[in-house]
Image (cartoon, rainbow, N blue to C red; front, side):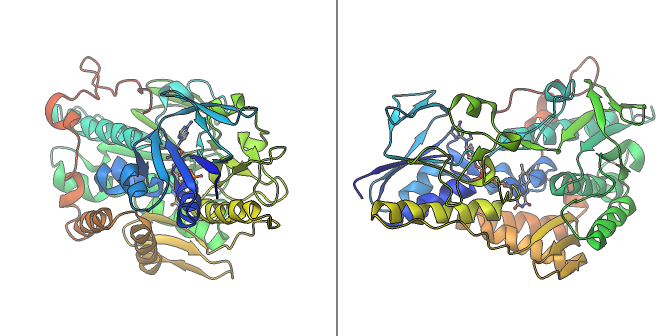
Length: 432
Ligand SMILES: Cc1cc2nc3c(=O)[nH]c(=O)nc-3n(C[C@H](O)[C@H](O)[C@H](O)COP(=O)(O)OP(=O)(O)OC[C@H]3O[C@@H](n4cnc5c(N)ncnc54)[C@H](O)[C@@H]3O)c2cc1C
């Protein structure tokens, strides 16, 4: 137990590894580039004004202060690993020495080298990015109310028909069909156009066909223009080229397609496989490194790749914590076995899909209630949970009037998210 463990990244995986090791009295340093941890599955709620950013973020110093013993938090971005001298290099302060290193830095978007996507599309991986999307959206709607009779549209293109794309498009569609007529009476319902482009012939690829059909039906019923078998070929500030040869005028492109490793990981001297994920042994040790482990979205066991979701990350975190303790005691480590508890995605109010490993599926209100329950229960911090519950309940019961309850200063005061000359969203900023 004399050893120092450094955990890079305090997301789902990092937190679970931390818990195991802190409980056992280890000297643990949790490193994250943000001073808070973000609950990514609810970011799209922040992007559409349903939740406040603080509802889904939890301060990491408070997280660490809950455990007694020799643990600490260091806010820094890890820039490299000096494996020979067992040190982690960071963008601020001295290198951090370790005996055991746990890599849990998650993943980011994958633009698949599509021209202009990185420069012109928005992503919702962080709190800051979700807020930018929110402000652009509401700024765009406000902007249109100043010239309501000009037949303008605000067109949002969501790229990718996985769970994130479906959730984002579904919520935007509700704003279009239910909120706009009430909250923006100057605008016609069609002022907000929501298009979802998916290159495959189906939405929600890992789900049962019945759930895929249900999702497609619900989205179309809610007014989303779903285009299956349609890939994005190029993204420009105000238009995109699609694989059917057409060009689409757009005000906001939300990139919800593909997950890739953070680019800096390629400099860390660790073996990377498909999608840049770090290759691990069955026990989750990094291949070729006895004292390094990798978990969550950033890791892959090449023979049994797992989906990049919260459950695998949490379970891997707990497993690695236990393996480090076992190895320290001179015991054999054991391979990681994923316990699939089911998968879910929400489409909008009263509509979601849930698929259990035994093949059972649930749709509609029951699935939606399950989705809300699981997500609120998983949030860190009692106050966050309460705030998120109040905001979710308010949104549910006071909808559509509550649709724009929580908006950014950019809308209310200076429209800074919008270019005053063109009235169009400004170019994406560098994410936090
Ligand atoms: C919009 C969205 C919606 C999602 N919805 C769902 C859902 O409904 N259900 C589900 O199961 N999954 C969902 N996911 C996926 C889920 O959030 C991830 O699978 C999960 O967060 C992975 O956990 P992790 O611990 O590997 O990484 P993360 O939770 O991403 O944590 C990584 C941490 O590392 C930090 N970090 C990154 N790089 C560095 C660095 N160089 N130095 C220091 N710190 C660093 C980050 O700040 C972050 O705190 C969603 C993801 C997104 C983006």
